Length: 118
Length: 113
Image: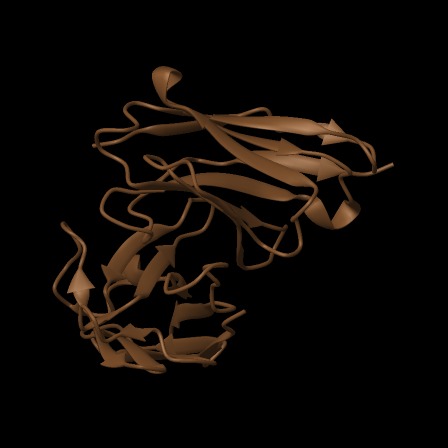
């Protein structure tokens, strides 16, 4: 069973930057893909970005393309999300989620809260 | 982007009765090369992260009770919960993982009548 633990959420002003981390109990051997999914307060789930753990190929939602960068450090079993030019509508709980056999998400972290406000 | 539309937005069902949630995709999520529908269902209880319950449209995740079932193909999918239990109260989301971005439906809130 893979455990995922997010960190790095904080209160930040519009235009600011933040780097989220997701520590996995194991990465390359048990996980095919890792994804960031966010949930604004009282709202539904929004897929943000994903990475194929083996190949490193990355994907982004249009809403974050050019502002967010997903990356992973397989040696440290850690996933990152570098978030730049943050806006108020980026305010959300950010979940790290993983797919053991594909892109459906069978492992989820508890989430980390990002608040963007002046 | 593929748009996922769930219906209804909310649903109240009596204990022991059947609950049915629908999900429609704006384009097919069926891949003919492997005969699979790239559709998953998640359950999110209050204050918790989502939990995978169904993948490949109809494969139940390990440990999920068999009262949960998924069906459908192409663009139209259904999550059925037979004999609703109190612990099934949650918001349910469908998600396509056929093409990025892997979009979610807006969610269906399931309550006890």
